[in-house]
Image 1 (cartoon, rainbow, N blue to C red):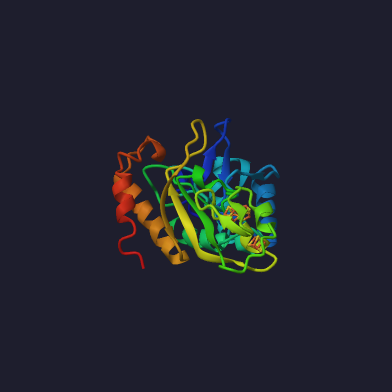
Image 2 (image 1 turned 90 degrees about the horizontal axis):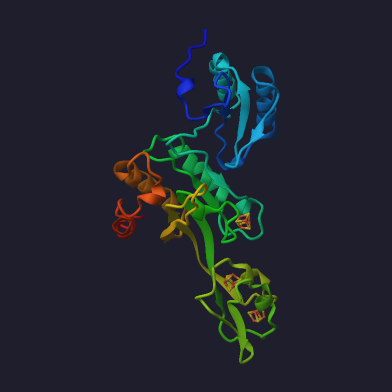
Length: 285
Ligand code: SF4
Ligand code: SF4
Ligand code: SF4
């Protein structure tokens, strides 16, 4: 007989308005799921629920209207389907990511692979506060990384090859930030206006604008909800393994210092963010 190892206590099991029913949320990094897993979830929802699956704002799926007595069996079925029960309490919850370089023409980084690596190391870790992680492949910020406790954004710096610009103005048309002007017959970039999206790099018909310093911007302390708050810039790094290392350092820093019962965005100064910001780059490979 299957033994229940505390599935009732998992964050991914959410009590419903009717306290005799619960919803089971699934662990699904970057919202990526195979069609076979999707079929499996449909079968499980039909067998143990009422044949309904709900898509959440954090790119995962949840199965509503489950009888608590069936939780052990549904947990086992979800593990077998390789879509285990997720998390939703004060822990690292489902990590979200935009399509990134896998599909989006604007992307500067591989968001999905990064989400999967972070998930493998950090998902479900119990924390004093809820930690939401969101990754976007460019400053269009489709997953709103700045409104999550930890946000990651792929950027790139455009550099014009000196002396070759024809002044055709194509890049000026493409830049939504009005960061490029034609002066004396050549394009001139205003770095203060540039958000490092990289669109102009692909727009130049003469391939004159080059990509330099492709990097990840990491932000901390954002939030959505009742009082939305923009996260603070922490650091930029150039390699995926550095992102993983920095995010692990943030998690350790929050785990050791943060108080429960208060949102991370409200205690950033108490947590000595500025000192942490100075120290974070030490020891990075
Ligand atoms: S954030 Fe950028 S890379 Fe990601 S989906 Fe949106 S436009 Fe594409
Ligand atoms: S990188 Fe983006 S914001 Fe910067 S100049 Fe090019 S198009 Fe404009
Ligand atoms: S698109 Fe290329 S050639 Fe045309 S103005 Fe811009 S940098 Fe110069």
